[in-house]
Image (cartoon, rainbow, N blue to C red; front, side, top):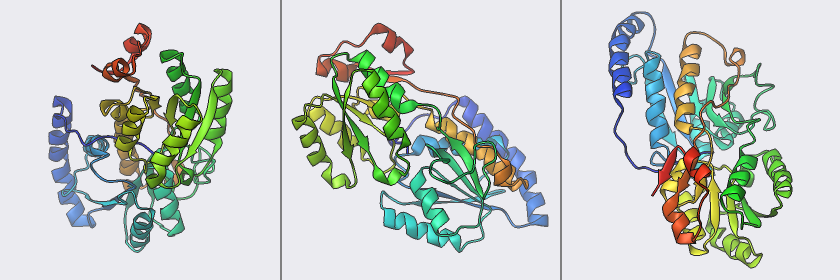
Length: 334
């Protein structure tokens, strides 16, 4: 699951117009709703905290506005946060199971699993999931079945592409630590990236991050094993600033799943636009509120991808990144 820093940004003119226009559309919808039915109640369940997904939540609201849905006018959205605690996440899920909600929106396998274990009957929309089929959440992408649907990265081969980018950017990398969160569920992605690594002539050391307090120990062991590169597999529970600090401390070349990592000092990143996936998740909310069942809404995949490079970090590491790699980047930190 994805990680974005809390750095603010100005709202674009397009987003302002959408929100303002959405408000105009929402007022008559709200008046009609008040006459015919209660305002739909939506809950968002996040595994981390709001500071990490600021841009994603902002784009989720933009997506709602694009569909004529305005929080506090014709819908009510409650935001609940696990704050990186699996226990707190499970308790929120149990509480949500007791409420009569129109839709629950979430991201990542941990909150989805918590909601299903709590026997939530409300429709569930996941803004981001790696592989909902292998995790047993949906029957297929075309016909999800059950009461959940959303957006998935299955079949995008992102982990292998990141390894390729790391090797292309820093040919001197020979042994890579894969940071893996065992709570993410399916290990298919881990096995696929091991296979890809062999094709690139890379050795792999798997750092199992079952306890985030053990990160320093994991990095110490990795360096002892002659690791000189790091690739982080997706997890909403990773403390990405701590990971970047450790990579800097041990002068390790790194590649990550989101641009936020390079803003805080990571070397390279490649992944889907998580804010765009959140915006698109609002389309599912709108369709479900109009009466469509989640089982009838196919799982979609990302359409926008964001490569990123940090030239300042490259200079610190004594690395000259290829001009072609820099030219392809959506964001370059200098």
